[in-house]
Structure formats: structure tokens, C-alpha cells
Length: 411
Image (tube, rainbow, N blue to C red; front, side):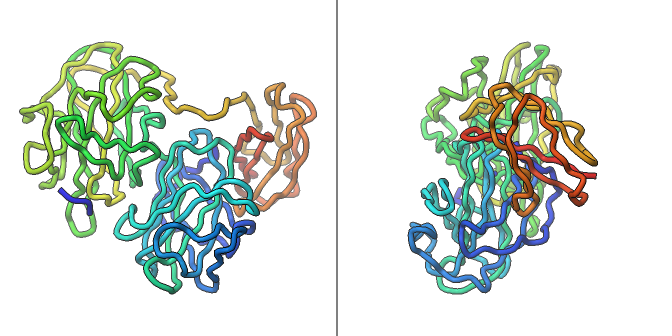
């Protein structure tokens, strides 16, 4: 085989109207961190200039910098895990770098050239600090020039600590974007899977019995299905994701080429081996027997880096537990209890918060990141007037070092 993503808004996959462009980080518009599927924003580098002085991030260490670049920014949601991905416009080979710090004192984090579809960039990490502002720089790679592109920020599930809890069949639309912060290269297991575009799922069984699953990839434009590899771990330790590393021995794994009429793979009656190495072979492993109370973690890898989605369909006699309140995300900062009501609101909202946040500042932003009003939480219940605002979506940020963000809908 070879190599061919809190404030969150759930949107369908479509291209959204572009934000105003910014040639400098301090004027960068905000990207919304989508929850389940990308709402791509149309961007352009036309009219921008290339600036590599310190206040504009210096010289990016990848993707042949030198072309005019533009900036975006986003606030890290409660998961601490975000993928920033891109697709082609008139730019078909892009570069991307991200920075933390303040807009006038940027701290470089990462740079990418070709890890998204085709020759476009993606940066996917689960180690962001909750509430931080991250600055995103984009340019045309491999030669001077300008043009259009599409960019999206989305909650990432590429590392174990940000695994998605599931208990039913589910479709994931375009939800695999990068390798995350951890390199899950499973060189020590019999499947020898190399990580490209990965996603982790987790589930717990309510009853014992047999267990199967089938992954049905969404088709590509050229009628070829992506090649999904996968590894299944069984571990009941709540700290599993904290101690997990790529030397862990899986219960079952399959790196067989899954190309075919449906491109499907998984656990099924046609399976003959619990460890299927790369190359042609049976895309299914045998049906498994599971016990009540057991928790499993499923690592999935889109080997073809197509950024396309898939359906996962569960089967067998064992039933999954849908009543669990599971959060496998390791938060970098503690969460504090805050209630905001009514929401949607017409004239005002009430903010009831943890006593430890009294004295903290709050700021209300519009969709472009413009600050509309701010103040101080002087008691456990604070009223914020909305009656002068237009109908639409706003974001409320609370806190100093620790920030909490909330989506507010104004009727």
C-alpha cells in the first residue's frame, strides 16, 4: 500500500460564504470550530502580501513560503482537540502554519504541506490549551502566486483521548482529517499500520454475546472507495487513553486492502484471522465474543487520505450500553459549571456561574469575532442585555486564564 479536526456549530458539508481576509494576525477573522462535519469557508490570498517579520510569524518552516499569505484564528473548545483542514480552490497546493500566544507575539506550533487531500495542508492536534486563541496562516505553496482555497476547523477525534463514544450505527461525514498529536504507528503489531487520517471510537457492552461491525466507506468521485485499516483494543481501565502507546497489543487488527465493490471491512463471518497484514487479503476478521461491562477502543485509519466519511454498522447478539455518560477527553484545564438561560433569548440572558468565576470578565462576540460588549461577573447571577442586537448567532467568552465559550442564539 502507499499513501495517496466548547464553541461548536453543527453544519452540513457545504462551502460557506468567506470571511473578510486578513493579511495580519491581529485582524484575523474567527473560524467556527465545527462539531461533526466541516462547514468550509471560502478564502483567497488575492490582494495579500508575503510578510515574514517577527510580528507576522517569521518564515514558516514548510511548504515553500514566499507567496502572499492570509490569517484566521479560532478559540480552542473544551475538547482541546481541533483539526484545521483545507481543500482546493484555484490553489491546488497550499501551505499552513499555526501559532499560539498573542497576535503581536506569536509562538510557532506546527506547519504542514501535503497531509490533506491531494497537495493541500491539514494540522490536526489534541494538545491545545482550552480557551486559547490559535492563529492560522495559509499561503500558496510550491511557487509564487495567489488564488482561492477552502478552510475549516473541526473538533478532532484522531487521538485516543478524544475518542467518540458510540452505541448505535452511525454515519461520520468527512470526519477523518489528520494523525492528531500522537503518532500511532503500530509497527509492533502484526498488522503494521501506519497512521495517516485517523479516528478513535469507544463503546461499552451492556450484555455478553457475539459482536460484529462493518465499515462502509463513502465513495470517491472517481468511483473508488477509500482503504480503511483498523485496530480494536479491549481495556476497562478508565485511564487507558492516558497510558496508551503504540506498543499495546490489540485484540484484533486488519490492514488488508479494503478496495472492492463496497470497500467494506470489519468483523464478520468471512473472517479467518485476527491479524491481517497490509496487502491483498481478507478485509474481514472473525466475529468476536464480548462480555458485559467490557469497554473497547476502535482505531480507524483512512490509508488513502481521502478525507471522506463512512458508515459503521454494528451486529451480533451483544448489546451496547447507551446510558453511559462517557468523556474520554483529557481536559488541559478544569471545567467549571456555568448555566446560560434563556437560550435562544430575545431581550437578555442570565449567566449563573461557579463562585470561583466571580470577578472574571466576559465578552460577547459576533460571528466575525468582533467584540460587541464586555463586563465583569460581579455575582453568581449576571444579566447581559441583548435587545439592541440583530437576530443571529453570537459567542460568549468567560474567564481570564481559563476561558469558557458558549453559543448564544438571539431571536
